[in-house]
Image: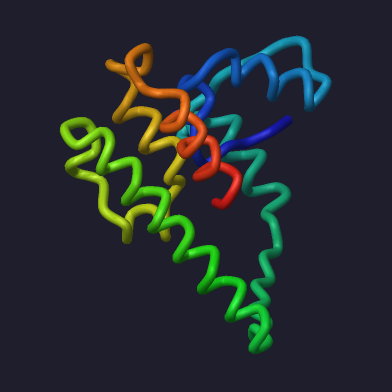
Length: 130
């Protein structure tokens, strides 16, 4: 059995649900909402114990984190310069806290066939950096 907090991720893109099923080595897929009776009962039987640990960053780690953030913002700025109309509503803050590659791909999806190879490479770089 498996649960997902982000069910929409399985329907965006190409055959993500099939890939997840292959990774989990599952042949049958049953979709139940979380309020389904059996799902609620199973969650009550074996409720997970969650322990959150937040180690402090070393100075070098903070420098690396800042550099990655700067590169993400630079990639987004370059993409926005080349694709002004499609990426108007995406801000640099969105790219630091959410999945930037998915947001940019969704924004460029209607015109993806007209996006330059350089811009497609920048979108891929956003995915690598995030």
